[in-house]
Length: 269
Image (cartoon, rainbow, N blue to C red; front, side):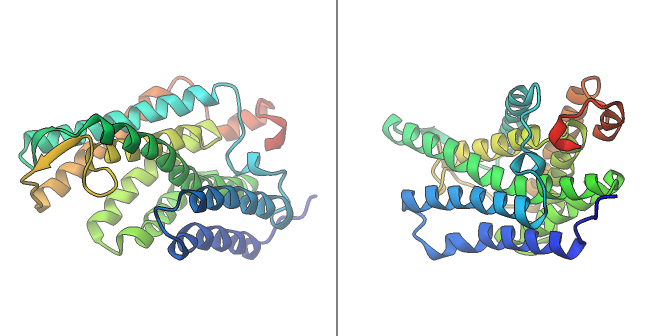
């Protein structure tokens, strides 16, 4: 019987990836593009090394990046759902008076901002998806503990978000809703692609509205803050879970069941 990699080693690898993701950007200028490309590339090198030599896996594919049949469709479907749910949320904000729209920004501002957002939000999303969901999916799957995967990945995602938003109770609930949805798609598909699409699409719609400095596609005026809007945000964001549930309901069975039939890619065995 093949010896299991100790939990302490998995925790060490997770800490290494998390510290890289959250701490390294603090040491360079946020507007310096070459630094970001080096940072993103460096993460994949580190993740490969951790996977291959620390965890004794076969590489990034076993951290949820297996390009199974339909992976690109899952990515696109996730993006559309994530983008659409966030668009619905911001439409509700506008109708409920959270902000007023004065007009559109200049095209010379919109196009570069959207291009930057597509790239930056993709990489920020995939780094998080590998570190939280792909990484721990590999652990729970190897230990035959997938019944606990969604719960654990949800808690880890909510706690991980404290790096950016602080220990705000409402934000923890919001992150838990998203985290449960993201983790559910990984459990059902055996890979991070739909989760990545959801994450990327939602983040992209956020940048469409708010940009990187509060200035998105539209010129917003009289922006209001109130607890009521936080509850609206939670209620609309929660729609993402039933949306992906119905998309995946008839398409997938549990990855563990697939493994028993021998239908998983060879790198998963």
